[in-house]
Length: 478
Image 1: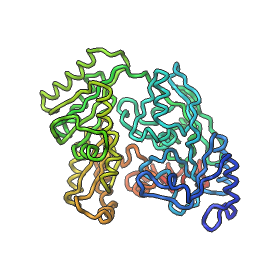
Image 2: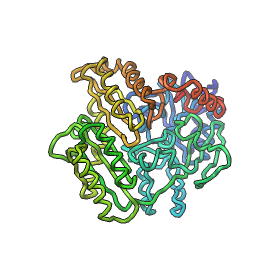
Image 3: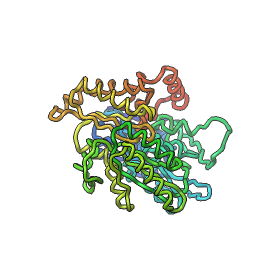
Image 4: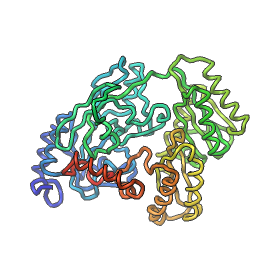
């Protein structure tokens, strides 16, 4: 950072005034910016960053050029719902936090091309509604959709509950607009499904967590709006039964399973205990559950419902499923989903936990779950395993809570050991230590243990080529 840009470890007033002129509004000083400078879990915070809130791509470009000239770090942020600290500056880093919430325009909806062009600060739930109003579907769906922003979703390659049918965030993008680390603007807002003219540049920025540039707008894929949905809450014999049931449901419905979520009772009970408006779908308590949604774009037809119910009935006959409730209304289906969507909030209310967002091949989920639990209990007997999530695409949120009565500080001091236990087990099953939450700050130092030096070298070369001054979200991911 140049001397002109800093003053006693903070950003100099003259530098901040230049930022304010570029964004056409006052900056938020660190002492007033706790909502921006503290992560959702309350684990990470910054003290020396100022917050600027541009309202256009041109304003973002001006801010980036000012920061590049002064070599001041830039930390892009969407809705601040991330779980690995990727959008929070380091504690004493004199940085510019670039909040994109004012860039919230839907620039165009092209229903015939099944696409819409949107700015990075658009709330995900708003985009779902825009698509619905155009008789289309934007399928990205996750628990934070009422506050997360699409730019953050794309920068972290968010997953969510519909990956099984529609793919991750990167699969839902046709084009991007990006402000590069030198302040130039790359306009790649093309609504094309076929463009074979060289490198697919947009993929460099999807999942890069703002380390290579700032996503300011995107062309998103839309899909036909589902006309017929069936949502079922089922009690399972065990986790192996979940995988077998997934296979059967995909076959029985012509591969129309949109979501397949696994919930052990310990996780479901947390939602029932802490989240108002939740209730148990079943009269009896079971150990294992799945939440299943199948959908199709054809009009409602009794035959489709019969296929779903017949598949569940056969699974009951064969002992895979112990009990099942098929939602009879949208309200009942919403109640089922409220239990699942509130898992993160329920765990937060429950108390401290060491969280893991991992992926293994779907067929390996039961073996991984058992082996990781065995190893965790060998180190910490009676630790409570909160393992749940998107088993349809191989993604588990494998979280560990302390034994009842254990001091929180003593428990959290074991984080490094327990992370290594779980992640080593993931690696042995040819998995990933981050399925959908990204690397950010939380997993950065673990990455070299699980990625090859060739992969890491390629990532470093890309970073050096695009961001030679290392001002874009420095210290994150790599």
